[in-house]
Image 1 (cartoon, rainbow, N blue to C red):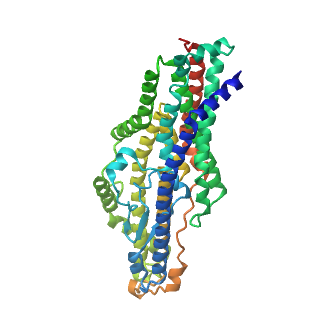
Image 2 (image 1 turned 30 degrees about the horizontal axis):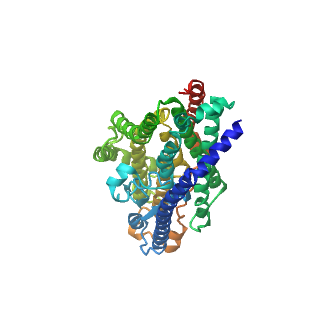
Image 3 (image 1 turned 45 degrees about the vertical axis):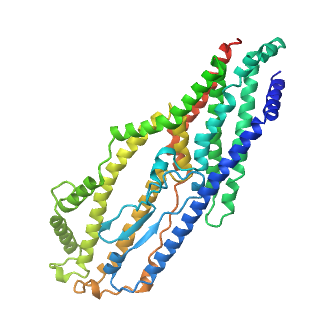
Amino acid sequence: MLLLLTTKEWLTGLRTYTLPAALLIMILLMGIAFARTHHQAAQTMRARQTANLHFRQQWEQLQTGDPHSAAHFGTYIFKPVSLLSSFDNGMEHFTGSSLRIEAHQQHSMATPALRVADTYLRFGALTPANVLLLFLPLLIIFACYNSYLQEKSTGTLKLLLIQGSTQTHIIRSKVKYQLTAINGILLVSLLMYLPLLFISDLYTTTISTYMRLLLLILIYAIYVSIFVLLAVAVSAFARNARQSLLLLTGIWLCWNIMVPRLGAGIAAEQYPLPSRYWLQEKIEKAIKTGIDGHSSREQRQQQVIDATLQQYHAESIEQLPVNLNAILMQASEDYTQMVYDTYAAKTDSIIQAQNTFNSYLAFIDPYMAVHSISMDLCGTGYLQQQHFYKAASAYRNDFIRRLNHLLATASQQEDAQQVAATTAFYRTMPAFQYTPPELGFVLQHQWPMIAALLAWLIISICLLQIITHYASVE
């Protein structure tokens, strides 16, 4: 009987063109979104690769022979574009993508200018991820809100019951059909475009990339299945089609629009971030007077001088076999980095508190769970941004340390202008290479969101089971 009822659902879907129409809409939406984001990501990737190559060549052909001047000249490094950013560009429009490397200055990531900010704030960018997160649930709602109620309103429900079927069989056949059809539409619309990513020569693909892709498909399949189960449950519970549609669109509005925006606002109120001006003022004061406020720059310099004299068993600066100025500059760099790391850790702890608050909200809103997992799997979330910034900062520190070390090898009598650094030396400076975090690292940080999503799947199944027993015939 269940097979017969499921076959009836498939025939109805094909006869009324509901299924082909839904498939066509999704293919069109995904095609438009994919073409747009893939074109933008490819353009950005080419621009960053060109910029990286240009600044590297500029550095290797540097004519100044003074390492300290070279450190002030500096260079730039650019964040590589993730292959899966064509699917979900996450925070890419709002986070920095390049870092200026320069002596004495700890630059933050340069942020690109926002375009059409009002559109972004209200709707977000049109990406394949947003099509699946925002538009596919609407399609599910319109396909399922009347699925059980239609049987009641047309009188076919009683006929089916008279012929030996049960309410459980009828609802299960509808769930089976909708789950298969919606997940089939999801799979077809993804498989039509995602393989195109792998024919591009701009990106390097690894096993981890394929694993991330499989997990993305699985995560979105769970997400749309939750909507299907809830939509059929509401259809069996509601008194009429109008009530069912209102309930389901209300759920979509709360999950996809209201809770994410209210959650972000409440988290920002509960855990406010310091202003950039306040932070910079604190950092400058800490560098000048010490993090504890009791070790001034002059005191720290004297400690370095004493330690250097003791290390080389010298009684005066003139007897040192190394350039003391270079050692002082490196000590200053190390202390400045420590100050920046201290305040960056404080700021990061506030952002982590905001993210933790939002992870709790994922237990009342599966959209937030899927959104967060999707961004991190695509390498466009906060986790990857922090990972890149730490790698870029480590490279910057090593870059400046190598130049200061060359300067320090000169005798104390030589000043910075007398220490020769050739282009051969500049070529020995390693180029910046970034390795994204491993998949296990991402999943380790996303387990609360994964738990929330699985919890919603279980809740939806249980809710449907309960409502199936109390679904009305009249």
